[in-house]
Image 1: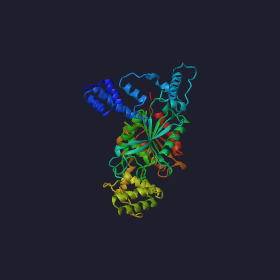
Image 2: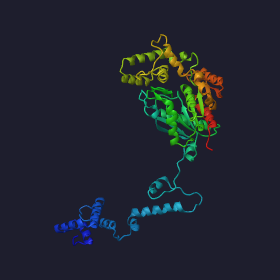
Image 3: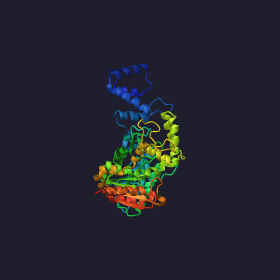
Image 4: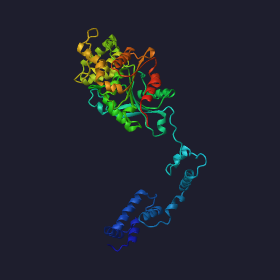
Length: 481
């Protein structure tokens, strides 16, 4: 220890003009005095955070007070009064008092609401009553990115994160109640151009508002799956080595995500599944295979292959055959990755005939090639004017046909489901399904004594969704006790 006192050492620490001998004495003192060494470190820290005024080398009075206060010495100005020394401090105190009065005063009619601009300025000081956001009377929708591990291993590079649209009804933001959920596999209404997720969201919102104009027993959350995959093809939501296990994505990945992120009723009794057109039979089979996930299913104009139906379908017209065969011939001359790129390009081309587009997506779902390279599926025709290969033809037929064989093992589960089937006739009918398809499916359900509703309608997709589909689910799905 040197002869320096703590007080002298601290004065020298604050002085930047020490003589050389004093500087040496201070260094020796700091080596042996932990207290003054800590004070010196604090002094350096304070100077770095409180820059010196221009043209001055000594600490300002304010810096000196801050250093002394941090070292434990009393300041001549009490902390509580420091805000009063500036106009800004006085204004902050007045705002604080005004806010305290607004919050604490007794109720006299309606409490005044602080304007939004003023509330923003007061936010750093305290929480004040502000105008609650007004929920959209139409409800709102969210575009969510959902992890999709069930699609791992697909051959076409389908991403393992999928976009879905989640529609939340108007009352969702006004409380903490939980809601039934309808999962919708829809197709055919999307217009070219624009954001299809915005289209899906607007579609679900419009349908719910149409339903609310009628006799809707309860509001529901609606989850609309993306009907288009990474090759710009229609998703079939079945298990395929080419496009991925879409059924498991629906029943496992997506349901778990929605239950984990929204106020749902997480039980099969409160979940329904809508399947439209090509998605009709896959929706029914998904509900049958997972009775612990879904308890109700609505099939809108389901596409099924009754006897002789495949040959008459849009997938096998001469135009479709020619377009598919030409594409397959081009791909055969290319390496696998180039073949995939060509398919992605052609399937995104609006000039591709609709029947060919439908045939390629159907083939990848139900007639996949084992090697998993472009073109990824087998087509019954090698020549547009020739005869189909009987084995490949049988594979194509088995995809959405053989209803007795598909239904028979699941009769008990089918009888416990709430099922509705609609046949759409007139201008509203979709070109890929005919009025005979739903009727044939209804006949097969009746044959095995499966109760279901069967309705023949002449309504557009949106109109039926709002006036028939949502009311059906609203009635049959369990609500919050």
